[in-house]
Length: 106
Image (cartoon, rainbow, N blue to C red; front, side):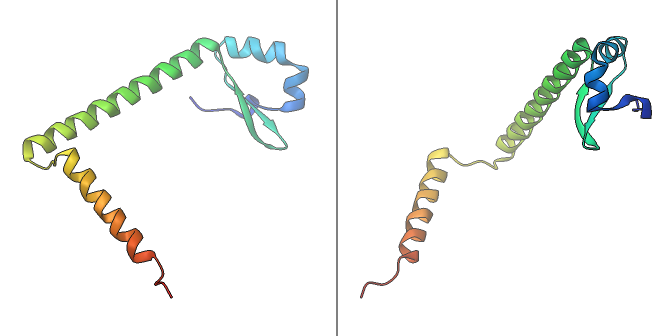
């Protein structure tokens, strides 16, 4: 659904006509309210906002499932290391990096 020019409303107009704009949003219109000529906020039906939030949650869940699938594929392919070994390597690198950055004593 595209936004028509009539759906872009200056903030001052929105303030003066909030009840009318709210009725339009409840009927399905989405209004973009501008401030100083730039997009500022949107006015949409609360049910539609809830729907958008549910879509975002679903998207997040799908991304987590895909991450888990890739992790399982890495395990099957042997592309993993024990966490303790990796942490130990990081700690050693960090310690050696800190030593090499110290200036020589005089």
